[in-house]
Length: 531
Image 1 (spheres, rainbow, N blue to C red):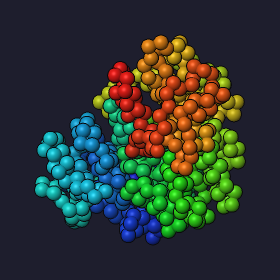
Image 2: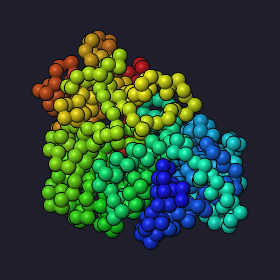
Image 3: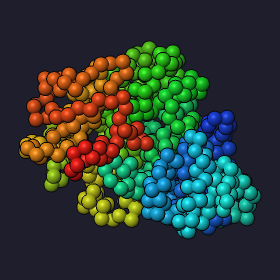
Image 4: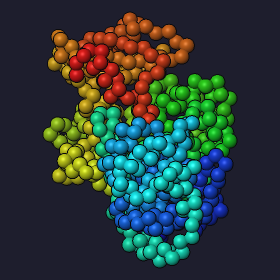
């Protein structure tokens, strides 16, 4: 059988359907699909895409959250040679228009209602604006001009089985499989194109580093436009033959309940998610003995978080793992190792395992010695194919030797472990001195009353730029601007100390859970009247 080559994402659905047909593959609310069920539903969607006229390279857009249709449409698109794209139902109409207009999907699968909001009017508007959308399938009550996803995919299409077999047999690991738009924290999002090969080659390493296995039960509550959902957790579970437990939104209390209800073994989250859970009274009551791995990425974890997880692990034997990655490299490219010290987990993002290559380079692309801050460059089979419709943007970040310049600044120690210092675009100059906001944020986040800090540049008549710090206050803790200023003065050179501090119960967040620095920069612009 063709799937035995395991060169494409959907091959792993076929593998586990053959080897473990009765084992649970996907759980969502009251729905429980075995691997045999998942293959059957995937094939029904694949046949439906063929009837619609989806050709190799066409895009299939999915406007919903983590649920079984996320996986069946994603795997089915790959099986017929199409490219799958997830979109967040929290997006504004302008965000949806931009991504649909840029990607030009032939099929739109959309959720009718999300968080008590009826998306029908917006879906109708998109259908009218973009005639290249040939078919709209609705999860829930259909709207005029669209059909029910379940009704449409449930129709018998045995006459298309030979064509499905032909498409599957002719597919290649180098075919485009996944389109993910960057978060847009520094401007218009770019469409990142990945192949089956880049996804498979990354997750081959990840399932080993994350210790995900056929008995694992993995939680997914990330938006399906995010690399965590599409690759790290979603496809990671499929490759490992694990059970994926889906939630259609992140909720700290419901997440804690799900840990006990489904006996989760793997909990991969952003640090802010763990912190919000820790603030719940239920946190101390939750039985976490089933969890084998706590993993985090996307931002540095505060010391208080790492120590709280370490206390749990000391009782249960669970592992803690963090690392570094991005959409363009298809997930993690560095990992910490079991047995690493708490300081290593707090201060570093691990090291790159084979076959990934990572180096730290200067402005001219020359590799820097260990201990020097420079840009992270990555090479390997996990790299994206390019930015959709933006060859000039792709050329800016890919050098002639195949190295991807990430835009992230870091230094590397003698073990090969990297310490992320900042985004290249976040660095600013004050009085001629380079300032890296991440360094200041680390200091602020070590304060007992601070959960998160974000430092952005503000214009200044004397120094050209100065730092403004936005602080997310820990509930129940009293902090003041003057107290934070003094705290920084004892730990930072004077030119690095922010000139203003804004203390708030919550900072603006991107759908990924990261602090939305673009929103803060816009706020600074509004307050100063200058760019």
